[in-house]
Image (cartoon, rainbow, N blue to C red; front, side):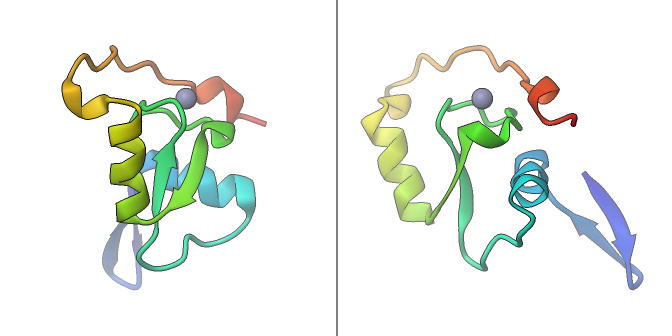
Length: 82
Ligand SMILES: [Zn+2]
């Protein structure tokens, strides 16, 4: 996702946009949007939480995502449309 602002191309990933839209707030610098559902394409705000890169890695490890077996991505866009 991207748009132009002050002659610069602004890019934002869909889940970051979804979080900001839903929370009506900006993501603090240096923080990431992590997924409860482990689906990088998911933009369902209730599946998203704010975390540091370290949180994200720990979350990954706890869920065993590093061991492989990633599920097929599904997009949960329907929850975002008001
Ligand atoms: Zn999800």
